[in-house]
Image (spheres, rainbow, N blue to C red):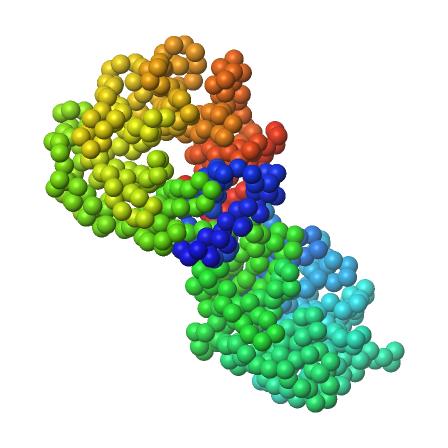
Length: 635
């Protein structure tokens, strides 16, 4: 990851925190950045969350020809075999059996009465008035049943077909077809409508550009010029973009509607099928090369088009439709073969991480310093990546010069398999302590400098590690005792046997304050340890009878946050004792079990198997895949 990428991420983190948590004054990046580092295949550099919908999720077909967000905020999806309405992440599908004119829906529009119109390719037009479907086709006056574009104009719905224009008067349903708009059918499909200076125009594939003129005595058309080909049209601000074969032609609007249009320039690639106004005057283009694999999702400016792939990691090259939902800040794009993609452009949720593997953890105080993936450790500043083979080489090097015998199972160690191959390594977690990065794995525990040098190695298999206030390493055997190391070089440690009821066992996590270490157990409650008092078991003392915890976190205010096995969240303030123990009941949290807890100022971030809860001042905001959190699973 480059310094520029890190800077980009950091600025977005700051923006989000200032929006939701009252500004950024804390030096603890760790308390929030986890939301940017969950399991993901996305790469850095303003990485937007993407969700794919296909027939698996309920779409009627994976070829998405038309998209429209209506006045109520509902997304309508026209496919090659069925119409779908998306609401709250679920689909309701419609077919001919429900009243559609035809199942292949290529165009969608909404009139001034908020009635929905669906144009099919082959069966005519369907109008939905909120209660029932009404069909318009060649049998009742439509000029052609193969519909390409719909355009709401005043009290009319304009219908652009494969060969000709029809006008439907919305109030009375009257169909007015214009025979003079029919020409050579193979070259005459309607490629778009636009308005300028009070005038209405339409474009065709290879028969030029026309103006539609309304008179009291009837409607006429007037040819403007012969510019061709125009596969699709984009009218954005004072510019006209027309899709040519393999590039985009751009005009000023006034010059495009002149008899001899003067072109500003040409740029780009593929064939752009839809031009989508996005946030802050951004224009997106969906491209499909028909016979060439040069399509994709692009950002279009006055003189170039740039791939949006690096911001989304979308591999598809066959994009054909799109729409932007201003309310949810979501870009929806349809493909010819892979269904629908939703891209959340809200910059409060962005991704960090440059590897196609699960993120296991991160380290850093006022800046991001390291990311642990399932296949190695990334050092942010240097850009160095320590892969599993580097860890294996370091282990072998350390083993050759150990000054003590290897730990054995008979001595209550979780014995390592020293012959394990690098490809079989498992990384558990990443901690920062005393200027070193500590990674525990199934081949041992490593202490690494921020420059990437392996400084320490402990041949112990421990799922959970931690440090006490004296910077001593703490390890535990899941089925045995606990050790605190005061001399790693000589493997000198204090051992606490599992038979002692005061010894923490089956740990879910270890945290430390300035003077005390805390241990959350999966089965035997909460423990504390200090050199002055030794170990305390709050369950054994009868101080707190809660037995089962899944996670533990220490907030910046010194409070201890514990996730109970059955979904309750407990907040313990050591300064006030258990008499003032706070509880956030599981019925206030979306999800059945707590996976992690983090805090920032007065906000508590609670990860569950269904998404992210943000608890603040007694209320919960919930984020899952619908708000951009990938699959919703956060590690």
